[in-house]
Image (tube, rainbow, N blue to C red; front, side, top):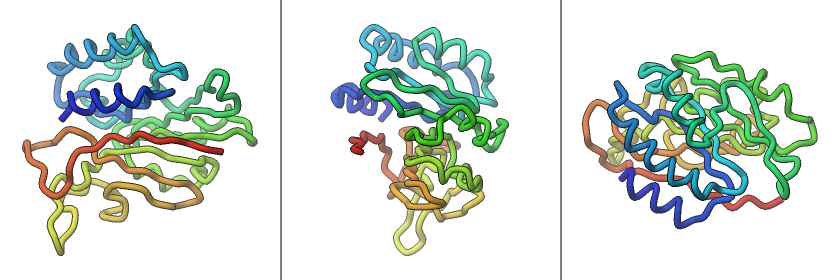
Length: 209
């Protein structure tokens, strides 16, 4: 699934590549294959850049190692800060919040440098970021973490939902708190290698004014 996700993204030829965290699980064994993929993107990067935020498992694995490795591949890691996109996307900012579970999420600080008339796209690992009312400043918020429940049963819904919102934002597109919120089911699994009724996904967006 991970390799298919990279192939889908490469075929889409995105202007901007956004990575929503949880790049590693438990330790650094998956780091070499991740870096090989990102090094190939670095040789032919999206014109708008590559950005990432940290997830809860990244904090457990060691953020310093991950940040150093990602930035060596040309990926800007956003920890409660924002970066403007280059021309021709003037006035668009990619905003990144730290993880709400094991990090120090401060979306207010992340948005502090974004002009009030700019279009802000918030990148956060978990939909728990929706507890912050300042997300209303963002036209779009992108996150993941939920895996769509990893197992979602007919008549029951998502089974494994580690979110303070419960089953409110399991996956897909929502409208909440003044922002459009998209929750990815991601491409991995946690604790057991099984998905049922919650297929992996990546998002490819065409944004229009």
